[in-house]
Length: 318
Image 1 (cartoon, one colour):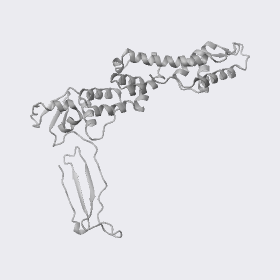
Image 2 (cartoon, rainbow, N blue to C red):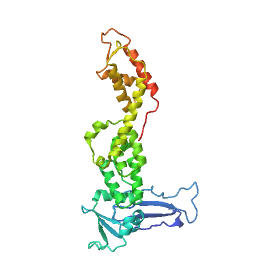
Image 3 (cartoon, rainbow, N blue to C red):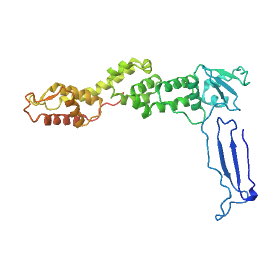
Image 4 (cartoon, rainbow, N blue to C red):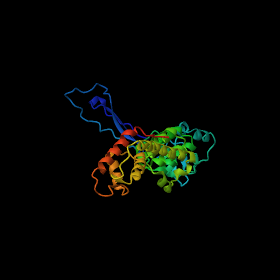
C-alpha cells in the first residue's frame, strides 16, 4: 500500500526510500537514507538534497486492507483485524477461529460479533497489537478491559493492566478501590501494595461510599484491612501507655490526648509539630484549667516526642 521512489545514484544524490499509507487513516510515513552506490560524498561537498526528518504517524484505525477478519462490537463498532495477531495473544480467539465464520456482506470478510462495547474492544485490541497503548485513567475503564482480557485469556494484556493498576496514579486516586480490584482478580502483590496505602483511609467513613469494585471484595479481604489498622492502633496504644503521665494541672483532657494520638498517629504520617497542631486544634485538649500553668505545652511536647520516638516501624501491609 505504498510506493518506492529512488533518485539517480549517478548524480551523487544518494538513494532514498519512502513509504506512505494511501488511505490517510493509519500507518506511517518515513524517509530513510540508503548507502550511496558510488560511495559517500566528500566532507567538503555536502549532498545537494537532505532527506526530510523521520516522521511517524502513531495512530491506528483498525481498517487495514490486508485484514482477514472483522470484529463487530455490541454497539456497532467494527474492527478489521488480523487473525494471526489475535491468535497469538488469546487462546480463546485462536480456538474461535478454528470454526467457520459468516461472511460480512459489505466487506466480504468473515466477521465475529462480540458483546463488548466499542470503547472496551478498541482498548483491548490496542493492548494486543504492537502499537502504542492508550492511557487508562479511570477505574471503570480499567475494570472493563480487565474483564475482557480475562474472558479472552489475553494474559499479556492482563499483565500490563496489573502494572497500571499498581501505579502511583491509581494508588493516589483511591487505594481502597485498587485493593478491591486486586482482590477480585487475586493479584496478591498488588493487593499487598494497595493495603499499605489504605492505612491512611478511614474505613468506617469510606464504607459509606461503597464503590462498584467493593462488591467483588470478600468479607475476609475487608477484614484483613481492619486487622491491619487495629494492629497499628494497638502498637501506638502500647507506646502511649508507656509514657509518663501528664500532671492534671498541666492539661485538661489527658484521656483525649491519648485517644487522639492513637487515632491520628496510626492513620497518618505526622511529625511532632504536626501532632501538637492536631491535638491543640481538636478543641478537646485544653491547657491548664486555671489558666495559670505555663508548663502545659512544654510537657505535652515532651509527651508527644516520647510517643513518636518509641514507635519504630508500624505494621504496614496485610
